[in-house]
Each structure stands twice: as structure tokens, then as C-alpha cells.
Image (cartoon, rainbow, N blue to C red; front, top):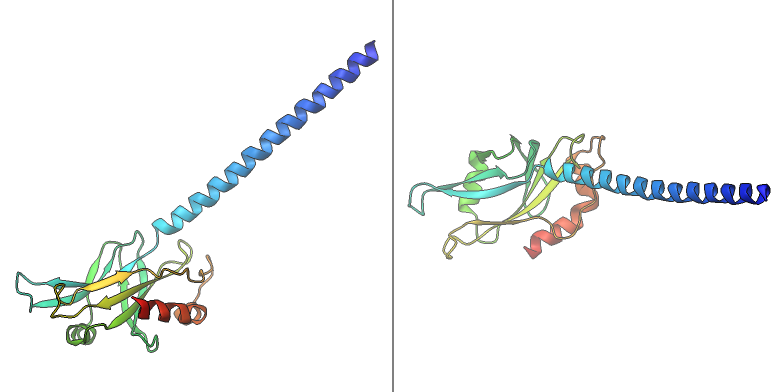
Length: 190
């Protein structure tokens, strides 16, 4: 009888250990998932997102200029503008979160004089230790004669771009190489 009680107690102990191990595994899996979600949220929260916007002076629709506006939560170390060909980028500097800055005179004049449908890719570089480093945005200048009077329609690429590696520097050219076809198609579709 004593042996039977010991066997039952041992089996119950093994059953309890198995049950606790199963609970611990589920908790570990949940913690890992929460950490991954927190990391993704951190990256999204600290990304710079830079668009081209039109700013009018007073109520005169003929007196305006174009600005770069960082609407993201993180600062942009470098911002590059590309035309539809995605060649010969123009470096336009850095932008803090929430900051906007008038485009350099030649780019501003190019946008002011641009024909309807001029498309631009803005590529903002975030610190690679805090974000996925590069954030592309698509920008389309509308016709001056239309109701929106030369405003800029902007969007993020609908198709996911290849992610930049975190904690590893990647140049703009290295980012564009695997993404160029998708970004060019997205610009045309805008």
C-alpha cells in the first residue's frame, strides 16, 4: 500500500510539474510576442516621415512655396528628393520631428513651375539604431488650374519595401537597389 501511495504521489508530482512547465512555456511565448510588438511600435513611433507640402502666403493663391514637412515621430538625419527617374538625388538636409523647411530655391522653383503630374520620391533617413533607417514617401504635384491649385498629394508606398537592417548602416543607394522597381511603379500609380 505504501508503494502505491508513493507511486500515486510521484505521478501527481510529475503531472503538476508538466502542467507548470506548460504554463511557463505559454507565458514565455506571450512575453516574446509582447516584446516583438513593443519593438515594432518603437520603430514605427521613431520613424521620420517626410512629405512635400504647399504653403500659401495670405489668401493670394499665386503667392506660395513648397516645404518639406516631417510628420513622423523621429528626426530625419538626411532627406533626399528624387524625381520619377529615381536618379540623381538631391540632398536637402535634416529635419526634426514636426519641423518643416522651405525647399532649396532651385527645387522650390522647379515645383512652382512644374507641370501637372510631377512626381517625387522623398527618402528620409532615421537613425539606424532606432528605426528601420529609410522611410520612402510618394509625392504628386497636382495641376495649378485645378480646384486643389497645385497642392501635393502624398502617400506611403502600398507595397512593402525591403526593410533596412537595424543597427547596421545602409546607404540610400543600397536601400533603393532592391526597391527601385516597386517605388517607380508606385510613383507612376499615384
